[in-house]
Each structure stands twice: as structure tokens, then as C-alpha cells.
Length: 141
Image 1 (cartoon, rainbow, N blue to C red):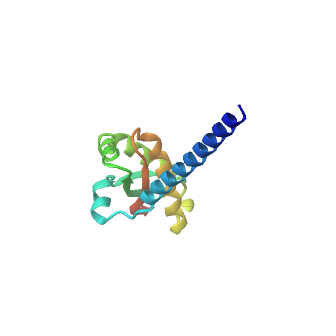
Image 2 (cartoon, one colour):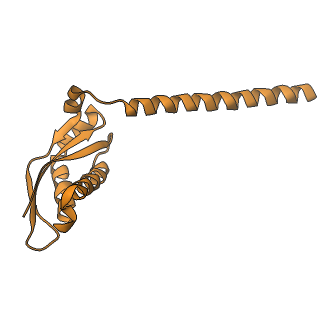
Image 3 (cartoon, rainbow, N blue to C red):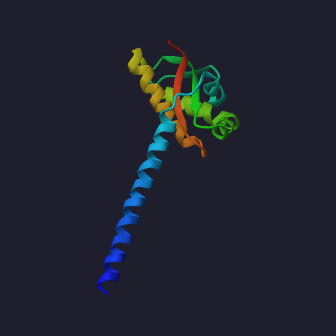
């Protein structure tokens, strides 16, 4: 009975170590794929541009004119984005309208609006994810 317990113990330890190693190497592969830079062609295939949108800002008497480039995780997500243009446009308007003119001044303002819009758009899409959002046109009055 003692030998059987030792054998079972060794098998369990080996399975745990093997499972841990397999998990570790699978995670490394996933991270390597995420870190891989996309070529210009891949970026073009996975990106959508919004229309130029004009909306009021949260500060009275101010408005913004914006356009964004949205990089998506895969082709299915891009197709979904193209079908959900009204929802994307609504998310852009709601996001831009939530900021005051003072919040959007300078590079930090651009970064803030890109991050906020990426988070809001991630809630819109059922498939895939938003990898990044870039401001491609930005004017405030």
C-alpha cells in the first residue's frame, strides 16, 4: 500500500509540474503574438476611420471637430465596427462631449480622449477588442 501511495504521489506531482509548464509556455506564446508589431498592410486591414464629427464640449460655448482611427484586434471585429457605425459615432460624440476645452488642451488631452474612447468602444463590440484609438483630426473652438 505504501508503494502505491508513493507512485500516485509522484504521478500527481509530475502532472502538476507538467501542467504548470504547459500553461507557462502557452502564455509566453500569447504574449509573443500580442507584442508582435503589425505591418502597415495589417494595420490598414484592421483599422476603421470615423467620419469627421462636430459636437459640443462640456464647457459652454465650445465645440470640437474630431476624427479617429480605430485599430481592431481582428477582421471580424472590423466587420462588426463597419456595421455598427451609428453606435461608434454615438460613442465618439458622448466621449468628446464629456470633456471641457481645458481638459483637451495639449498632448495629455489627446491621450486622455484616445484612452477614454478606446474604453467606451470596447463596450460596444461583442467580438474582439479595440487595440488602440488615434486622433487623426482635432480642432476646438
